[in-house]
Image 1 (cartoon, one colour):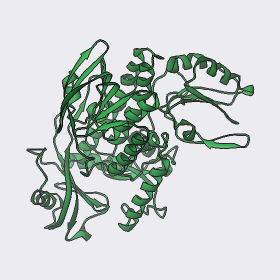
Image 2: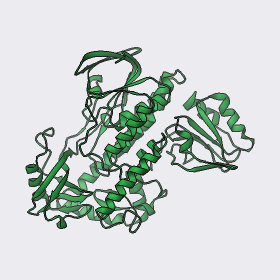
Image 3: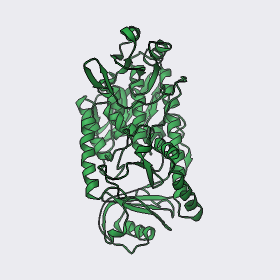
Image 4: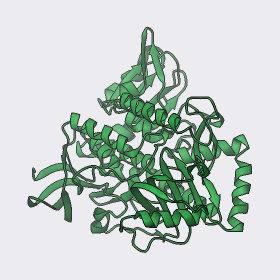
Length: 496
């Protein structure tokens, strides 16, 4: 392994891989260190939200995502869909759930085409690994980070592996090493939050009396359980596990399943079991000198609503291009302050809604009454829309100081055309550049942008509004007709 890099990313999960891809596209020499010998096959996220999907689509993985989604859809059809809904359009369009209340309908959303996708974490990680490989990113597995020392101009990182030990010097270190992040602990980040109160289990399991198991979720006096795509899910509210690291045995899983379901069930086949808790914590900042955090290293919460992977991928998308610009010397270090300022409030909101979901899922009369109220409220389109956009992340709007509602939003893919040229927004974003969609007469605005920086691709479009879009798909400026008021200021704020 070389002993020098611009950035060392610790962790080769989805967040670490996307961070490395973003940095590499920004012209940065990045090295990834991963403790595990191979990608984990433990059951984790069974789907991904729209912002996570879009982060990958912008970097050339749309075809891979479509293929993985088709495989998942075929499996869903085999298992009869979700709660009786057809995955191919024969039933209600379900875009998510809140506390197991599968009532969030895509047709109630402002942008129904921006939906969650049933592509699991292993498939996402494989796509990202392939993309990282195509960029020549060095990923060193079985490499355990054992220490770090910060200096004024960089970080010394110590590591050990099966073949020895060593050091690598980098300008910045990015911790994407999960909820128990060593990087976070060694760098001295505070990680306050609430202690776990419950245990969630899932496994690929074959059980008798399967006909008594609902597709989706069912509440009981002991908790909640259900079956989906061959997985058995359970929520046990008797408390957190005594030893979270101990393997989940068939006997433990069967005992909890009987207690929670109230069915004298037998687990006939059992594999790939995992457990989680509602441990909820948030780092005090995402940047401490030259060490930064992303994904679960910066925030942990229960998996309710399936928000975690998209939250982490959006962290990586936000951080990567900014850190690359600082390392290239084009932007001041103060740009990194916007990473914490923009992303930490988003995580804070996710932590709050997952705590709320846990509260109304508890098997006591008070929680059940509140759950019934929430279920009734979700029948109203405005409430449904609010909940759907909250869970999906589509309600995110960074405060960029503009009164325009579209400024600060993360924009979805869309067709763009100029004369006979037809393409899409994400197709022109694959190399990590910013984009300026110029609908002005004579393209005077494009001339202004091009004279300021070479990090923005100017694209003439037939219809407005004109938009300046950052590499993370955040709309940094928008203007109607031929107005360019504030455009140059926005370009200099984010690109030069």
